[in-house]
Length: 222
Picture 1 (cartoon, rainbow, N blue to C red):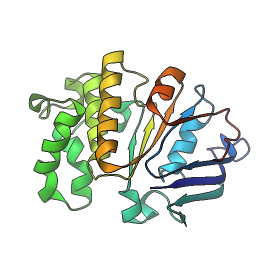
Picture 2: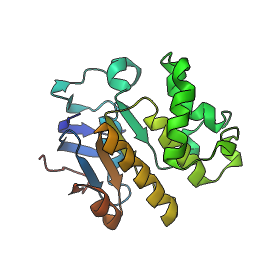
Picture 3: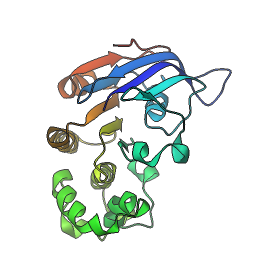
Picture 4: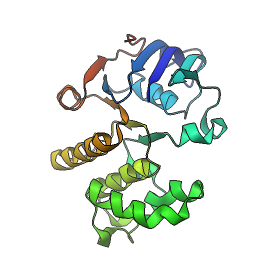
């Protein structure tokens, strides 16, 4: 999937947008790192790309087609083509769900209940979870185990674009390596495009085909 952001301005205060006139393009199958310090607006840009935040100005295109709706107003086919992993798994996971239900949540939401056993069987080993963890709830597992489940949830519908927003910022080196490895294994078989947002230049340069420095105002288009 090709992703283009053209002259995007976005934020939560129109008087002081977090992102102003930003342009960025990712080719199909490309892994691009968006590198910048905390608080510079890169997560806002990632949320726009993930169809979770409507920009005040500018255009987002997928495979050359402009996006006209965000969140639940985006076409289902487009929403399910994008997977997102956030920085803090405990803020993005329903504490009432078991890990198995958390991973399967998008399948149930799209009426694909029959595919749950097969997808769990594929994704649980891919992300490094063990079957004994699946009946547990978020408070019964570590941050790393919960983030593995959140990654599996992001992959469960087979997205063509994966957005990892500081996915490993709170994790140790071994868990970081395991999650990056899982993402790359998925991309190797699916050809998915990757936008990895982070502040660690070593990680992003090792992980991505290209790294875009981000200052919070504009990013260069490719």
